[in-house]
Length: 113
Image (tube, rainbow, N blue to C red; front, side, top):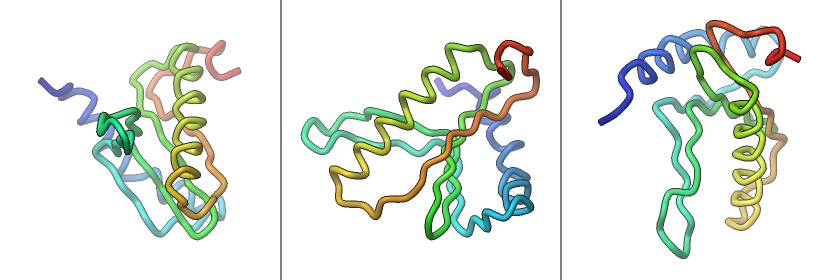
């Protein structure tokens, strides 16, 4: 069963996140929500999922959405981004700068740091 709260949170974040980044000069023109899944090409198994992807000609923002992120969420997202980058290289995808983003409603101070 899917996490309905997670789906709602992703949808709410998705509505405005591209606008916020575009105000910072990123000019993202591609936007994918709903959980982007990447499969291992040999085993045909899902190896990672990213909640939202924003993309332009040179940058990808990989967004993880959490109601109240904890440090482990940050560590896991960093590993996910590294794996995503390696998989893109294996597939011969155009190399782009990948930035990690965690969107959340409540950010404890230790997680912000």
